[in-house]
Length: 399
Length: 165
Image (cartoon, rainbow over all chains, first blue to last red; front, top):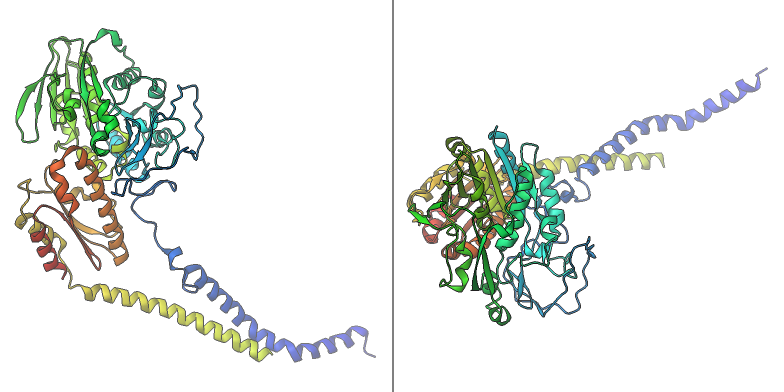
């Protein structure tokens, strides 16, 4: 007699014979088919998802909230008042600055009353170029102290608090932090955000020009001295002089705004303690010219008064101070913000060389070795550090 | 039912295989188009001719091709040439052959940004350079890109088009 199991086996065998053969045939095909379809979906062949396979744009990486080209000319836009910032500002104990005047945005400047502010966008790729250049200098110049002074703009420091964090004014504290984080251990970073914020109620930036004042540069000098472990001169050690009537780049950028014109800046200078230091600059035509560290620009055109500092932007400048009786040499690599800070360094070195990397075409390493410099100081502002062309110039110089 | 299911799977598999083949074909087509658009262009010769025949305020243009990678984030596989005048004039020559049209388009976009940044700096510090930066000669054709910043834009454009067609 068949046992129950045998009966079941024969009946199930029968069932399998009816349906199982087809399943066995289909299954491999099903697996292969699903595998191929999965691969194709992942590679984007099916579904037209070519975008997902596209490489990242090798160009700019910008903060999502920032415009990509703040310099592109557009019709001036007057925002409505009151302005609501997207990121509330934490004063952090700093002096609060209120909006004081009407507001207007031009292609290259934002005006509040009689004061201009440069719109700012952090660009990670160009910040990377800056860091790469400075780090390369640190690596190549063994035995030399390399410093990176990073200068914020007025739009990051003296801009009214209700506008700090507005999308056209990128966060310069965060930008500074990102840049400093990129610098290696062969470079001493000298960030200035906190140092300048703690003095933001003072006249540390011009209102009608994009530069900082000599007072702002003095606080930069103090920060550098702290990094170097040396004692800075007190502000009262310097003889001061004033050159009123300065109407700078923001005045021009705002189509010669009437309020700015009615309230020009005053260029206050602090002459080096030394009275015998001598400066010679080599201009863009290669001509050498003896000049003054601080030049009396009283009678100069209203737009030219920032050139009181070290003769302006020349490819090469050398300042010798016979009152420093050692062989100390400092090489400064800068664009124009550095001009206001160099006079303070003159009292600390026998020789200061100043190279404007936009115009000087030599090799930094060769130059530093030839001159026997102990210190190399990069002084660069955040606007330059986001400029791909300028950072390319800096990289060319460092090599 | 099973036959229908099997047929459906077979059809799906066929479609998938055809899609693969289709992608390969389009890639080949792209490569062919790239080659056909060129006659292969000697970008080094193009840059050298620009440096020689175009009038530059800088006088002699310096060949900085060996430092091109320092200044520009070039797409992988790009070969190019780079000449520069003195820093004040902002005059430049850049010629490049990229690995693909897509890369060439990206490079062109990067150079547009570069010129905009040069212009921003010139507006503050070198006003004499502004006119030439407002009218750069920047041409992309297929995998090739050429930029020439000069007041002698007509000559530059003529030379570039002579090479790129």
